[in-house]
Length: 577
Ligand code: ARG
Image (cartoon, rainbow, N blue to C red; front, side, top):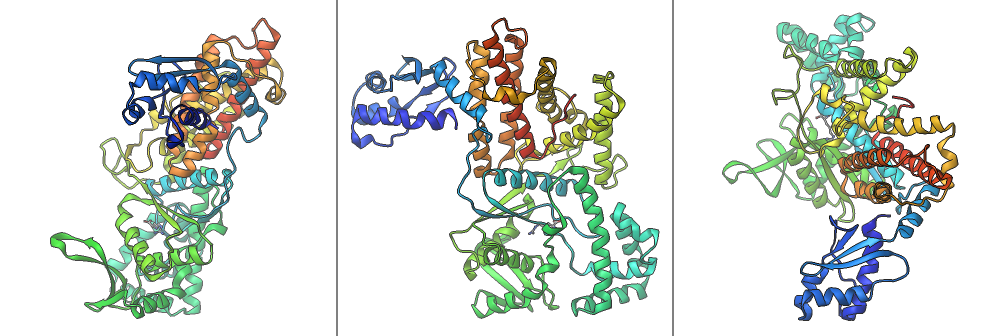
């Protein structure tokens, strides 16, 4: 439910009744207004079509607006705008119904099957801030779409195959499977990778063994596969430590790494070649697509089999599309992947459409992830210039949050502060990733994102905790207040109620546009409206018990919307702050 969606049909019918059936379904052009709750702007455009002055057309529309308690005040202003002020009773009914509904106005949509490709770190490599962002954004989308009633299938396309694995396996053998060096895969995978690399670059014999190992791996040699599995297992522990710290919903059951598709790659190439979609060029099997050209108009190929016979990233991604359509029954497929991979994905999809593996009825979307930058506006690194360790970054954020809460609430018991510091620190990192458009860059700034003021996670968590404290002071849970009738009177509580009833529509929009930052923006505005309300309208000290009840009910609904909204973003709401 939202103001727009409720009023659209009402005003549209009034236009039809006023101007005739040829205007059926006319867009009332509803816009926010400074002077009223909402403004109808349609009269200006309609005036030209019916050949009458806009103010006259506006007056005709007004005559046909419902008179049964929807609007409190209707005014024509300026050249022909219609300013609509809702009747308080209308708002009361809407917001009270929303409080009693346990979905708080969020619709249940006809279920679609939606595979979401997100996170996708690489085995034996550090997850970087880009992986962090796809993990956080993908998880928020998964939660939101699920809440809207869809069947989400999480697909964690980890990089667990390719030529470096010969070197990595040989390094694992050289250091010993039970060695401390091998354990680095769980804690500091880049250190392990660099160890392997150093050996490869300095030891000719090792390099030769590594190349032979790649061949054995591809041939399915049992011992080699066992070592490869060990490598992946150790890396999984590392991924899961990060996922655990982040509180994301990914589990081992969602892993569908590159290696999953090995057995399909030969057939994919054969089919594309047989269909004439792929052709040999300089020894490699390539797909050339209309409209994909590089410098000087030279066609850019999607290479699906290299001249050495190996398959590439594109071949595996063709397999992901086919699998998701054929076996996962996808209606809509999301790839939450870094923006620079856009060309790659578009070529893969165009090829899949040509091959008939991706029917037009299936929508596929690249949810582009923008870069996370350091203060120097370059890719985020440590102060020493080394690539960042994600676990260290999360630890630092929790420590910063701890300092913030120590300063703000020294009165809270030590155990409580220990519980809420990770909630705040992790919430801050996630919110920073979510609150800007997913495809824009932003500068990672721990100080700003853990701040208790501004458009931050901690500010919203604090807003929710503050509502909880009202119920603690009232010595009552919010539950009792959910069935109370809400009656707005003061301007600030009316504004809060109008903000609240938008929630369902905002969540639906996030499911449609795949833009979690819209939900962040909404929650931020809601928290501000609540602040204004709390400043102007006494709740526990309200003299009239009915007013107190109504205001407590508004508080309970605000709390529910804040907590539900944060939960859809994957952010926890501390009990106290
Ligand atoms: N592992 C890749 C990387 O780290 C991301 C994979 C994204 N998903 C996909 N289906 N291509 O860049």
